[in-house]
Image (cartoon, rainbow, N blue to C red; front, side, top):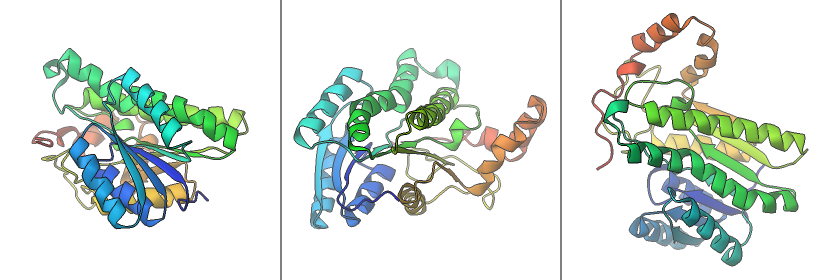
Length: 269
């Protein structure tokens, strides 16, 4: 089991959405929180909420698309807050545009935040976990890291990379016979505003997930040292149907409405 009580938990993208809710849940479990986000006002509000619960938290403003900025903040955290016991890489961005409408800068930023930031935070805090003989690294990826779809080419590619990052890291830690655990989270669309406007054809099979439910499942997965969390259960069929020829795989995604789910996307304003 991974215990939150007394643990130092660092969460990226903590100023709103899932990050904020996970921070509050960790605070209720009496964890010590370090929160990273580019939204200074949002960080201040979350920290105030945690302090109202009697918790310990500190926010650090950082642009996760900048390697040097992330490395500098991680060094500052280590100096002033100490080693991290549970690292939750939650931050993510989405453009929601067809590939040819995405700017070069937007594509690069998607990978910088959704993928490369994973490397910089883990490289900063994993040595301390290995030295302490304990730790947990959580990667909030996406069902879009298991199956691609239109208008999400850059996002899906970045999340496929995040899933591969977690899997490879898990195997590397096993080779080291390390007790450090990893958990990858692959949810379908969540009603946080990030994917405002997305549609699902069969809500009973592929519902737009409620944030509170997702957070409860994530916290439980971390506490139970679960290596992989996929939501909803229907998404777990994706690896199975990959054995089909591509034209049948594509037809199934089309039938279930996945390839048109982004047609009315507007995103967070």
